[in-house]
Length: 259
Image 1 (cartoon, rainbow, N blue to C red):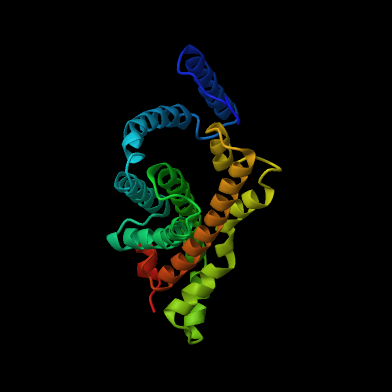
Image 2: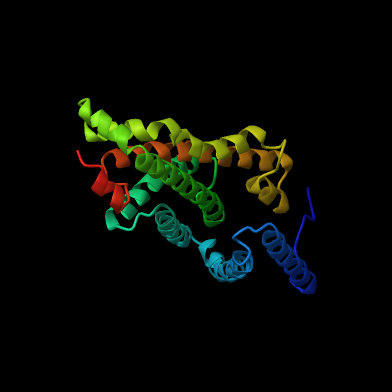
């Protein structure tokens, strides 16, 4: 019922448009003295290579559930590695804890979505839904970790004061990181509050481009957004619990936060 749609043809027009955008981004960054001017073309090249490689694989992932699950598992591991790098978790305990926090956010949401039957348990449904969710729980973990670790480094005196008052180490860490923990959830919550008013996110556009109706696109988008909000909340709470146990901490903080 909704034929056509937006397609991007591979050819010279695409190359020209990408070239103009990359050069423009570098020029604006250089003129504004932003330290990302050299990163823009590298990021573009890397994205092109990665998407080309993924395109070769995703066709197989869409054919069978086992292939789709394996594809998502690889994405999850890359997400764990990325967030560990961004937050300074350079030990196996820290990386394993990051994986546990992300899994606590992604797995329950995926179980609800597919066990309820709202989405079919097949490759074309697993790959996009799971990849969106994994990407967002990774982002939430990175934001939670960076802010919480900064608060712990700046709040060592608060931590020590609570220990002197008789708090356990886990309680003292919990109190220091809790006030700003929710900030990692604000971007996704704002996107949910303003969906359709400020922007039409990827799931909505994807269904439309696939020929689905606007109603089907809206249903898919609200499912994804609500799942992201729930998953990110679970990531934040689990991460705080693991920080309180000193599992999810960079090496310098584990050494400084003595009981």
